[in-house]
Image 1 (cartoon, rainbow, N blue to C red):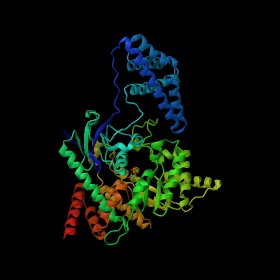
Image 2: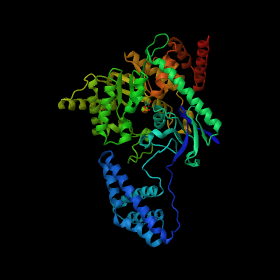
Image 3: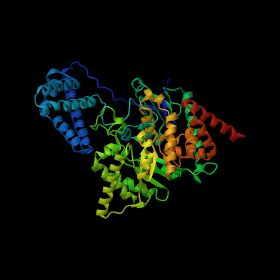
Image 4: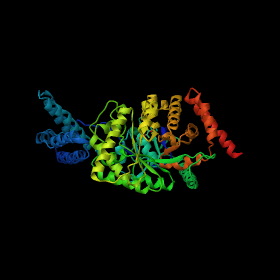
Length: 576
Ligand code: PEP
Ligand code: MG
């Protein structure tokens, strides 16, 4: 039995067999095969060629835009180039190379020849040949970009995981837990795990490479402990804890009756964050008062850009199911950053500061316009709001608003019904937007603070990088000052202040969010009940006093310490 600690990313306990998934480099053995093995190697090569061809075809159908589609089409053509395939097969047949070595060697010859040509176009084709060869080598190594296929209860252990890979796990109901070498609490894979109640531990450096596939693993997503080959005692303890947690959760359902309100009567709307129809049932059963954030990009990451009909259905169905329950805030696509479309051709050196969210949408106007039209169509139920992500300047907001105008005009021309009074808002995730939120509020109906990003951009800490996770501090005085400024500005402008970052779902920070004066919190579905229960125990007067106290403090450690004391004082008070 060995135990390691990582970053606790999604609470809960799990014990199951390890399913290890690594993206690391493929191995090529440079040893000749026996003559009798050639047939087997030829068959392996043919299978790999067939899988590669269907894989690239699937990329063509989910490509973003013409240039990407054209690139994959060229790759598909090259994959069936008779000269290339003949060269590989000759090496197997005449030189007794195993398939991997034959691919590697034939590719090197082709790349060398292409790079010597003076024609720039032909020279560039070397990149695609290398890409094809990598794909073939992965398939021959049994890695397959087909993704993750679970066939029994499993704890998925990976070096890293793209959100698109998470969303396309085959046999998803078998996923009992997740352990990743990289990542932080607010990485999007951690958020997905939390929203779905999958226990997860991330940022546990170099873990995946040492774990044997199929070995029993136990994880505690609340403490970050991961135990390989656990003793019986550990398994019993974890299962016992799991049962206790489930009983506690059942008791929390008592809070479903009645509104979300502090004990001195301050009403705070409690909404939830979802990324698809799956989130609606927990939302309704926990009596959330609306959807404060619908992350629409996950529908694309799961099914590709070609799934537009599906998306239209999901928007409308969500609005219909929530009709008498609360408003649904659809955020337009936040593609980019750590939410890249699998194998998309959009490599960036620094994606977190790059071509992300509204920037992506404004440079793909067709996609943006169509998405807005679909959201507007769903607004016929009169409970839909639309929100733009990662706004960093008024110019950008104006541009987004003009696309919204265009969408309305087109729907008018088409005679399509939609809510003409639809509320429009922006996320406040970038310090420049927080500082100029007075200007933004002149142009929109509402704003919602996305602290996951606001913290990373204010403190210059990548939210998904475990190496700097110690610097990702929601209680940094700079964050509190920014939040204080944003909430006060909202109130001065007569608007409500909302927050939908992960911070809103953490009981630890709730007294401060109440003290700051937030009117609306949007949290992941499993956090609705605990947050409502906690809210009912707080006095908004005490929270304001606490806020004033901590606003004069200079370090996050001091603030955290005071928050802990506040909780302890209250616990003692509750008992007396
Ligand atoms: C945020 O940044 O706080 C947010 C809610 O958006 P996301 O986590 O999707 O970046
Ligand atoms: Mg964000």
